Length: 96
Image (cartoon, rainbow, N blue to C red; front, top):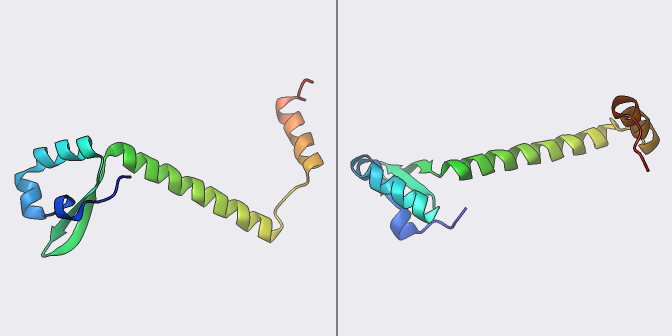
C-alpha cells in the first residue's frame, strides 16, 4: 500500500459524496488509500479491490502461521517419518 498523503487523501464524507467518481479515479491512479471523515474524525478508509485482497491474504497467512505456532507449543506435531508415511499413503511415494 502506498503512503497516505495527508494533504490530499483525507476528505470529509460530504466531499466524498459530491466527488465520488473523481475520488475513485484518483484512488485507482495513485493506489493510495483515502480516509473519509465524519464530524472531523476518521470514519472509513477507501482502498482498491486489489489492496483489499492483498490485506485479506496477508491476514489469512498470519493466522495460519499463528495456528502453526500454537500447535507446536501445544505439542500437536508429528515427526518427519510419520509425516512422510502419511504423505506416501495419501499421494504415493516420491519417485527418485
